[in-house]
View (cartoon, rainbow, N blue to C red):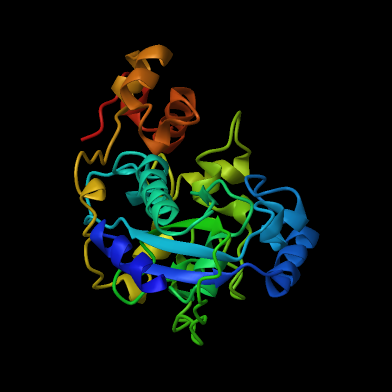
Length: 308
């Protein structure tokens, strides 16, 4: 059945699929509890520690976890003020559709099969699950890295009640050049394969309300108004990566959203136009605030400003 699963995934352009065990993740528990003790928690994670460790709390009769990677690198864009992950239509929508296609296929092939699929919104740690499924290795910046696509991959997983044969984690890590540690705008990469997400520019770009002076200083270190690509851009494992074969991440790309549009568009129109983009979930006000922070002190920012 595992071979059938892999063939089906390949047929819908999913190259990386692996199986993680549905067992208590005690090694992850140690790492996560240390993060909590240090206060290095973004608030976006599952708050119930037990649910992060025991997959059967999400699906009572869980027997295995199918994990898939979705490469999204489509090339660099000099004019971009959005992170690479946000160029395409919302990855949550794209990946959820593919995971559900896998689920339907398995329902038609396995009696009494049932499952729950998650994309960036599940109780388990996405990157840890990809590691456990043997799909990649950890970088110092805590990203999962692959040989073909580097760290430019999204992760989705399916907790299910079929005992697929599990894969083994890769016994290696990044080359530990520490480029990402030195170059990170917020110095959030701690050098021990963990980060302080509260100092990550990508996290700061999504915070609500007014930012602290420290946040603003971090935020102004590059031109992106949404997300941050620095630790990936300077990573040697990403130097010659291939572009994604997934057409959904190669089409309908948007690299830039300009200040003038945000200034004059209504909230309703913003949501109508960008509802299917991952940068829209906080609303236009956060993007407008971020634009103003980047260009504060720039004479052009004192009037409606259009990015080149």
